[in-house]
Every structure is written in structure tokens, then in C-alpha cells.
Amino acid sequence: MMLFELEAALEFSNDIEGQKGEIEEVLVNADKELFKRGAPKGKENEASQLRGWSVKGRVLNVSIVSGRYVRAPDALLRLRNQLNLLGTKIKAGIRKVEIKKLEVKGVELGREPKQPIKIAFYVDKIEVKGDKADIKFSPSLTVDVIEGGGVDRIIELVVEKAERQEYEGKAEIKKLLWESKTKEMLFDKDPSSELEGINWIRRTHAKGQFVYGRNFTSLVNALREILVEELYKPLGFREMIFPKFEPWDVPKKSGHAKSIYPDAYYVMVPKVSSPKEWEETMDYFRITGEIHKESIMRKVEPVGILSYAQCPPFWQFLEGRVVKGESLPLKVYDWSGPTYRNEAGGTHGIARVEEFHRAETLFIGSPEEVIKIEKEVEEKLTFILDELLDLEVRKYSVIPWWMSQEGEKKLSDKANEGVGTVDFEAYLPYRGEREKSEWLEIQNISVIGEKYPKAFSVKSSRGELWSGCGGGSFERWICTFLAQKGFDKEKWPAEVVKRVKIEDEVKFA
Ligand code: SER
Ligand code: ZN
Image 1 (cartoon, rainbow, N blue to C red):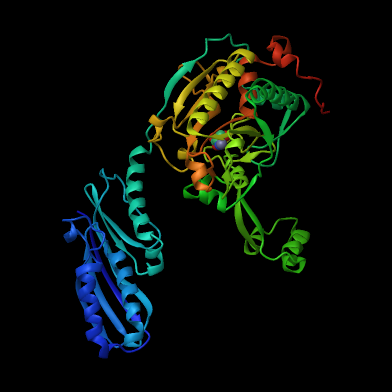
Image 2 (image 1 turned 90 degrees about the horizontal axis):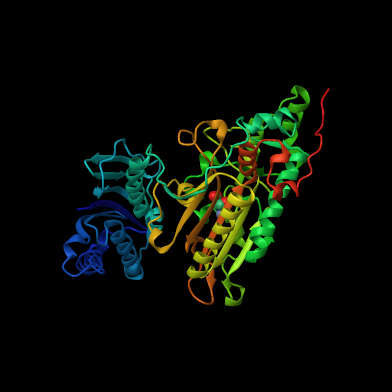
């Protein structure tokens, strides 16, 4: 059973030693009624109890214990409000509430964690005993944090961290849904090195970034045309332009703020923009030819991240609004710029880049509409990849992208309602035999459910609102295409040949 022990000092504006009687009355009543209010019938003994109190000068010290109902921190907030009502009568109001001690014992973790659990804020110590934990909060815990729900969130986080340990290191849960026929492979090398060799692409000074030449770009445009003509136009999708910078509000709402930090590209802007402020940084470069990063860091402020998942910044378009039924379902796509990932595991040619170009497909409507559109998009993508481009691909049901990007390692618990992600993986012959090598994820498509409309407070005038999205990077599509089909244009599928213009690229002496 979960047990809360709390000691707090409530400091009044005046000496209250003479008002002990009135205060005692409030405390006794609170213990009887206020501390139990809302607890289920028969469970009052698991609600808060006043264990002791004392008054000294302007300070009232209280000690409260509780089980899981009307937890001690909540009882303290109720008591504070009640005492403030006494204000005029005792001519003193509460100025400050200090949490002297807060401990939660017996938090159920559901499993025995293998490693210690740590939380950097407001917590001194987490002691694990079997599948339970005792959390000792630190003196930095304020009543504001309690009021904001911080104690509950810390308890949830401890449980989540224990759960996450269990999934860490385990292989990704995925289920094969479909596979194309085995196709003839026309190439066996890594197309990335080949592309660099013939100057179709050139590596930049940045990690995982390339300048894409004319032939490569022509291939990208061929794929774009195929998508527009074979998927977007027939299904009634129209193009939009999504921002590629996300102010903090976006990752806060999307949930990326829970765990995106090691993977993000950060955006900084000057705190002060007057050139005078920047003189030392300018001088340093003039003198040394180097960038004075330290002085820059002192003068900038992180305002957000570069777009990571591409669709989240779209939601600011509908945020806080009720969408009329006649505007639904809404079907759009964005291909207005790259998105960015700091790839911890390293980059590899065009198969794993940090700046990548993706067609993001987004649809919003009733649950039934979203489920239907996802199927339609999935079918068109399958047709394009398997038949038009003649690629060897497989489809898997995988951990939804928004969950894995939030650090989750399990399938959505809403899977039975139709929520989930399908990944398309492609065979790369240069990596080895089909069954022994890692295939490349080139495209996904998801039913996300109510998550995004809820997070950005978007409603529909006709009822429930869901969304879905899909994304695939052209770097990866082309990597797969060239890895399977090679560089001899004569052997490429007609749909591609008729759309590309391949000429000599720049030659270097
Ligand atoms: N937003 C989705 C993702 O990040 C599809 O592009 O995977
Ligand atoms: Zn998306």
C-alpha cells in the first residue's frame, strides 16, 4: 500500500500563538472532514490523517500521513486554503509554506528494476525494494510544484523508468504484414559511394549532409511526380508548407519534449541583437580565423528545435479551433524543406543522413475516415514501391513513431482501436543476404488517433477527431532504388525513365 508522510511549516504574517484555539478547531475539522472528502466509501482510513501539529511564533508545523486517497500533499493544499479563510478572524494570513519532509513509500513498480532509478529534480533518493520504491523528496520541492501536479508526475515517472528498463536492449517488437515477390537485383554495391564517385552528390562539412547534384535531383523529382500523380491527386491530397523550425511549444505539446534532446538540432537566437554586444565574437574571428563558440553560447538562447518529425508544426494551423464538418476529412502533404536528426548511431551515406528530405502525408477526420484514408494511402504506397518502382519491400507493424520518439518501446495500447504504424522496409543487396542483413526503413504510415488533435486542442464540429500521417525520405527511397536497380538507366522501370534527365555531371580536373 502506498503511504505518504509529509511535514510542512506554514508561516503566517503575524504571531499566531494567541490564536491556537481557532487554529486547532480548523485542524480538527480538517482531519475529520476535509482530509477525507472524495475518498471512496469505506476507504477513509486510506485518506489523509493529521498526525501532529505545533505552533511557534508565526509558524504552524503540521505532520500529515495518508494512503492513496486524498494524498497528504493534497490535504496540505486543502488545509492551507482553509486556514487562509480564517485570515480576517485571526488577523494573519499564510505567507509561505515550506515542505520539511515528503516521503512516499511502497510505490508499485510492477516489476523489479535492474538498475537504480534516478530523478534529477525535487527528489533526494529513490530506494527500491523488490518491485516497490520509496521516494524521498528533497527540500527543493515547493508547494507550487505540488499544486502543479508535480508529485503525481514524479511518481508516474519513477514507474515509467522502471518499465522502460525492461524494454531497453530488447529487439524492436515488429510483425511482418506483407512482402513483395523476390525481385532480381541488378546491383550489389553501396550506391552512396558510387554516387559520390560519379559526383552526383557531394558530402558537406556537416555530419550526414550532402549537396545533391542535377541527376540526383532529377531522380528526386521523378519520385515526387510519381507520388503526386499516383497517390496525392487520386486521393484528393493538396500541398501545404509546414514550418521547419519548432518553437518549444510544439515539442511540449507533441510530447517530443519528453525525450528528444539527444536527437535534436537546436535553434538558438541572440538574446540581444545589437552589433555592439557581439563585438568580441567578431573580433575573435578577425584575429584567429576561428569561431568563438563560448561567447556565442553566452549570448544566445535556445528557442526550439529544427523540425524532426515534420508533421508536428503543422498543428499550429488548427490549434485551438473547432474545424467545421465540411472541411473534413483534411488531406495534405508537405515537401517544403528538410527535417533534422542528430543520429547518435552515426550516419551512413544517403541511407542515414542528418538533413533529410521527406514527403509528409497528413490526414485528419473522424476515426472511420482516418482508418480508411490510411488504408488507401498504404495501398497506393505499396503499388508505387512494389509495382511502379519494382522494388523488393516488406511491410511491418511496428512501434508507432510518436511513441518511439517519446522514448516508448512498446506498441500502442490503442492498437485494437486501429491506432498504429506500418513501416515499409526495403532490401539492400549490398548489405548481404536477404535473411541475414538489415533492411532499410524507407516509409511509414500511421493512424495516430486522437493524440495530436487533443495535444493542440483541435476539435471537430461533428464529433471525435483523429489524425494519421506518413513519411518517407527521398534519400532512402533513392538509396533503395539504386541499390536494387543500379545505375544503368536502360534497366530502370519505365515510370522512372520517362521522368528523369540524366546527363554528365560536373567533371573535376
Ligand atoms: N511524422 C512521421 C515520422 O516522424 C512520418 O514522417 O516518422
Ligand atoms: Zn508525421
